Image (cartoon, rainbow, N blue to C red; front, top):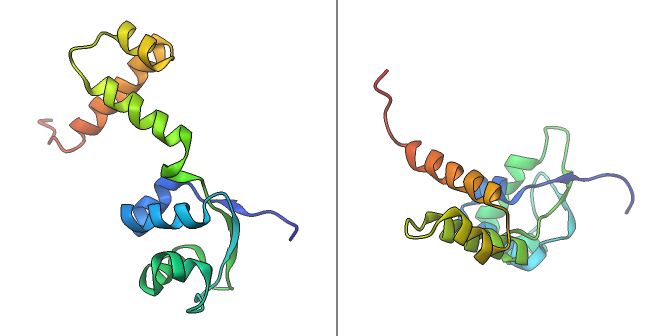
Length: 132
């Protein structure tokens, strides 16, 4: 196998497949390079991991009108980085901790904590209607 493959971010998998199927896919095949055909065969590793319906959804999202495409799957929500991000987000969501406390507990800078908290506030405010 030579040539390039498009990287498929975990967030995109979440959007396309939903959390349960995205986690199942990266748990089974995360970190691998795989070919996404126009239609997966019933015995393919992807179908075994997430089922034919979810595999068809993935295929429709990835494959072009000309054929399939090679993609690199992320390690996703199962890796150490994802676990660290979840822990940092949980700490940042706590109102009883200062930026400095969170930074020390997570081993990051206070700037990273401010950035993450701003991101969390933005997500919380996304559902709020604008008055203007």
